[in-house]
Image (cartoon, rainbow, N blue to C red; front, side):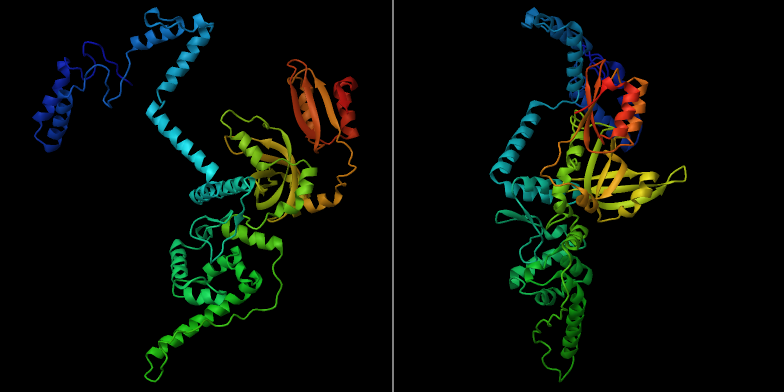
Length: 521
């Protein structure tokens, strides 16, 4: 606990408190170096006046309770001597003024001083200036700083997209170790490619600077063979698209690279053996790279290429699997996962979405695992990702039995359910319906001539009405994307959700609330 000091120098360590000298004397009486050192430090502190009024052992200033109360009185009631009018004189109620003072006092215990605040303000201004005038350079540096967080990288890439800046895929002749500016866009850094160490990247950059750009894939393998080039590194570079600029399909490179590396290794061994052969000759001759033998096979599909990029870099670089479903997502009024997560991450709490709100999400499944519940039934934890963020879905036995075949990695789905926020975790989706987007895409009517969506209005006395629990249960049986507005008569508030406006739902609501409290328009 903090110790406060009186004006006469009393308190712990006070200059006239002779009892505080006793421990120092005792320590000097113990004939050990350690105790003498402690006693000397203690004595020096006393002689420097460490026990003067208002100073604690850390050197910080502590106010006397009298001073705190005096400031409270001045804040609330005023102080004529210091020309302070006070809150009450300015129309602030007494209890409100006291609460404000308590809050200010509590904040003052950990608030920063002006110099600290000014320093951060300057950094903030400089950062904003760089982002405004050197947007590409700023975003490239920002991406480099968050390489360890795929979520942050995806967030900043989305911001780059909003600024009209594209992220170019890795290129063995143009990429540096970190993210760099390439023309009007940003080039992906080689250090972000999984399985490729910084030591090998530095060797690539050094060789590129010494011998010029790599003219072909065999040329790269030949020149980098002695720099700890292995098949795993080479495969990841191929899969992420680092050799696309050389004009050879990734499918053909993946088929032929092992044979090429083996040929280079064999030539290296022959060359080394020739150096010890008296009649070998040519041991010190520079050998050219062997010819790349490729098969005439087609390139991977666009989806397969993007999957490779995701596996090797953690990101979709040349596109996103959801690109072909943009129109479907728009028609289904699917919410953005990034918008949901950002809304719940706000310091003041969510402003748009709320717990238990029904939403529709569209994305690609990136992970799925099943678990047995206490009731010996199966459920699944499914990670769904769109081009803004990813969310976890909880799929229970009923939905799992219906949609199990669709819950596989790489499948684009439309999921409906309600938001669940528990135990300070990120928002999850309690899923009650899952459909493949390809199926939804085929069943959707054309945009032109589409009927205006119906909106359902109901009126209830209050949320405490026992019928409200029954209504929520009924709504789970009618998932959909049409708007529903619930008006509470006691507070006048309106709650919004989505459902399927079906005749059976209307009939059920009429029986519960009466036809006069149910309107569809």
